[in-house]
Image (tube, rainbow, N blue to C red; front, side, top):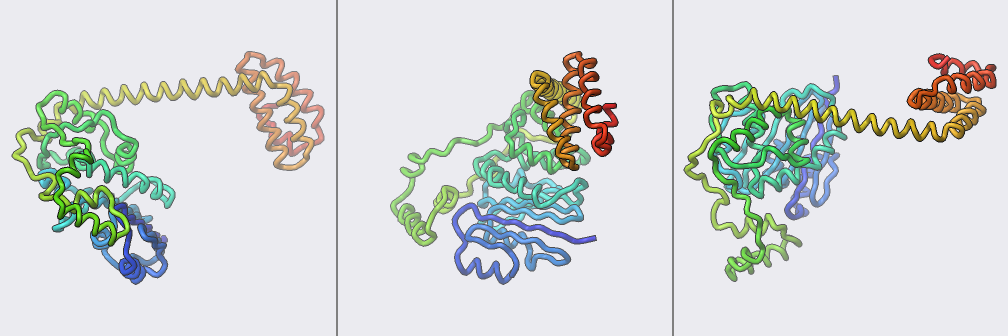
Length: 372
């Protein structure tokens, strides 16, 4: 069995300096390194440093997977972005590295049972920047997702502050996260029910107002931002806010309302029932749409049936494998179209003429056995 591993890290705020790129090159001679990213894969080898240290030093988002089922997604945030009260529960799927400057969240899967490759990794990686942005803006649903997953089988789990986030309408990125990390959707729905039924704290997701922020800065802070921008070549909004932050963004409050296993458990059965009903309705809608699309295709084929018969014969006249395959496809489509229009006898009559005209082409007839 091979031991394939994939690593990808990206810096969203600013660029890597030349010394940083040199340090990264010393870690891996084969990695693809740019001013904002580091990507490498290994077979029968491994990264020559702790990915957490790499993240804390250089990058804002990262992803790692190994073909034995291990998956880790990394999101780095300025210290104080998420209150400690939300990060105190014990979970095998969420690990937090705290420093004076950063909070590093690591979302882990020890054994992922489904097929996963570089394409899947790249697809999920595209969501990490927006997931980080949501966390930076005060939308901490990812942490609650991991709590819900742990709560599904741990009745002694420590509680979480009950904060009014929207768990009824998930972004595309949040949906991708719940899918990869197998978050129990019934529990997500149950949490939405809890928030509708119980008192909770309001989420602090006030939109950023540039004019108000700029007006609040001192001359010394403005000069410091200009100096940093000239030194680095650019300065992102997140960097500017971090540099001018006078205190932690989110001090722990004396939370009055808490989410515990006992609070959410009474809603689980109802949530599961509603989820099953919604999934059944969604499936029925999907089937109806697919049926309508298929019927339109069949109607178009029937309306152009003379042209389709002609194309089937043209492909058969090529007297090659690919031509016979194409002819077979045309004929099977015609068969379905005639059946859809209730005109099966007309198809049989025309098909017999086709067989007579191509009777010497045994390879073609073998492909049409199901229609004979």
